[in-house]
Amino acid sequence: MIADAAVNVAPPADVFRRLQALLSQVPDPEIPVISVLDLGVIRHLLQRPDGTIEVGVAPTYSGCPATPMIKADIVRALVGAGFRVAAVDVLTPPWTSDWITTEGRRKLAAYGIAPPAAAVDSPRRLWQPDPAVACPRCGSMQTAKQSEFGSTPCKALYRCEACLEPFDYFKCI
Amino acid sequence: MTPHCRYVLRLADTNLVLAQRLGEWVGHAPALEEDLGLANVALDLLGQARLLLTHAGELEGRGRDEDQLAYLREESEFLNLTLVEQPNGDFAVTIARQFLFDAWQLASYEALLQSNDAKLAAIAAKAAKESAYHLRYSSGWLIRLGDGTAESHDRMQQALARLWPFTNELFDADDVDRAVAAAGIGPAPDSLATTWARHVDEVLTEATLQKPPPAKFNWYGKQGRHGEHLGYLLAEMQALHRAHPGAIW
Image: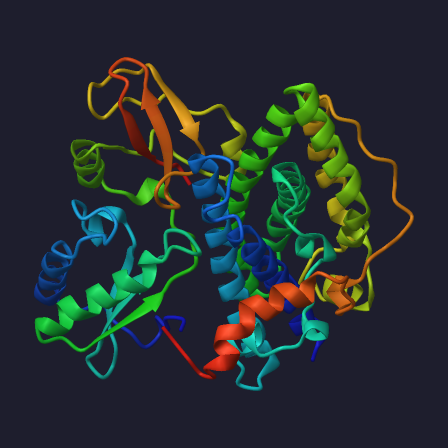
């Protein structure tokens, strides 16, 4: 379902703030220390003519199994607070790791996942050498990629050459 | 079915069939990292296939959703490229298939960013980023195995020779391709050949592998004319849904 912005309006400021407060409590199902707001997947919050709140959600990866769960969790949280809610997919522009908030990056690192180390502006940027990634445990820059793919589509597997611990790195995409 | 719909279905089926093939590696890959890697690629391709199948169903306008298209069509109705239905073989064959495909798929998605079909362009914009990662992964393995031991080099070379004939189909235009290219919906297949060959040549050189000689035979999986392997794949993929029609998660 595609959002039709022509008939939807921004909710009143107090409602918007309340929605944001509720969404800041909805965790990412795979990385529960960050919220869906931190992850940058919430693309719009609009009010439809019938009063329904429409939440635009950008999937992180096309096949990420967490996407339907994220939408269901959002609906559950807002319905629980008394809203009528529809969560819709937003494909354009595609989600990018650049949208993870500063707060989200801090929480990722504290959780042991190295946050994306560089900004992305086109797929071809992937051909550049890997950016230097700091170990989330000891902070060393002496780290090496073990595998392009980690425990979820959004992460790669690294190892710290200083403290020898393996860690997940949230990929730049 | 319009050429537009058939074209989107080709893209969808190609991703779906390759996702299913890669899924066969789960639990069997040479190392845990590769088990995860191949499964992650499969997951991306499955996600892309779902978006494309849903779009094809909307274009068709007969009310078929992604599940009906994936699980209730016969072999001859599948329009995937013949390359992706080829069996996994050893790890070298899987990597060669992935590499030859990824280089094509990334070029294809990048061309589709200009599509007149806004939905298709949006799907391609998302998928292109994922494909770039896949190509990085498969290129890396092609180089490691090609420029590895004598044994890994030979097996990589043999894998390329085995799959090379299927690459003709990637760049060979038929009526559907010509119609979508004329309408500005998709790229002319031969327009992708230069980008593809540039990348393939670069990686093969780095991998100390020889480019196989041009193949004389063409395949037509994208027209529904498949080799012997697709039927077995579909039988496994479709069994559950056919035993329990309408089943959903």
